[in-house]
Image (tube, rainbow, N blue to C red; front, side, top):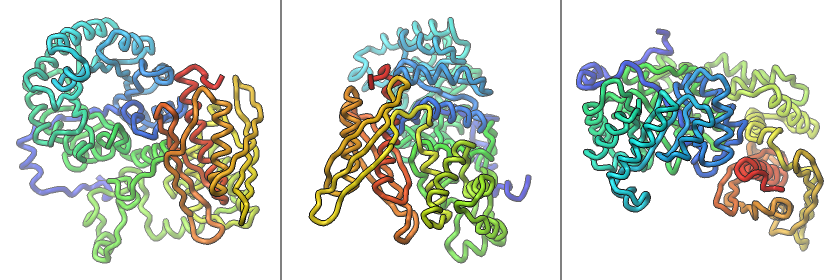
Length: 546
């Protein structure tokens, strides 16, 4: 084991381990594409789902939950496409205990199926309107049907941690006897403590056949998702449901980064995860979701391996393990020592920079781009360079994030051709936009004008007017949140805009853009968001823009 990979944990760990029922290895079931996409403001396009699935396969996850095919045409298409990618991992589809749902997973030709039904009295009474006997009958009937098509069936008793324990055990035994090969235990609303979750897992482990894999699915409503997942594994669960960066419904799910590295560093339990790709995967999700990783996020946040205190910094120089549980290079974050800093600063970026130099600089800053994205970044740098702008590291990062946060070219429906804004003292701010809008693979031009309380408001109003007029079946899209920040100081600072848009159905989408003109940043961010909304509708509602 190299110095960077040495782990220094509690000297009492071996004594504690004697009282645990730890598995030899833990399987990672990733639900970023299903539960993760239920995060308000996140909506993946088909190409983004494929990109994420390929990255998760590269990372080494054992199982990818590609989606719930019955939910929408978009989910159905994504599940079908991901199933045919030839990935090394297992691709699973989610279905309710219902024939229609199960048939959709069968149609998508997925490797396995994950079926669920609520079992808590609260859900039975107020949601399902079913008795316990009716639920048990449905479990047996539908799993027996699923067994005719799948060798691997995972069963989840939704709201398991608020279910009467005797009935929970009874429901899971019924599922196994009907053909389920794995049992998942969802803490659906994150309302249990680690000892309580461990107790449930221990009781289930004792009641179920030893060959049945038990899985943990924990939510973070009280910040306990990782702790509860680990508590379950301590009692014999050998599979963990996680998402990248812990994204998911409400406060999110258990974070893959936290669970996997805790198993490695604190328990010595193996997974199939290739640790060196953890940071790379986290950055990819940040870029696609347009959600910034909090600076204090464990392991992959920008402060995770920074040391401000003089005492800490001195000790880390002498031996990094004094104030670091693991070395950053283990999860793919290069150690920025003095030599690296000199190299990083020596690579200048400007309008004359070549692709190799820009890619090298971006790699050192933790950003991965493909050939097409790199070309677009180069083009934007040249435009800024021609205007006399000096490109700082912060500018480069902002430009790269804006490019990576843009919807793929093949899925665009709206492009900005021209923007004119008139404003000044005693002048009502007025804006005119000229757009190219795609309809049945044909592009046409559309112009709209509007006024506002300022130039940004006027420009966004004009854009909304053109959008609502053309995409009238979607309806008016509202600007729910708007955030502007200057990347660097000075009057030539790049403006980085983040917006959250909401359509009439309450569907939220986040988007961002960077430009030296804040009005342009605002309009481009809105166009990115509108493109995502249209892409969603085209998949779900069969070209609503017609």
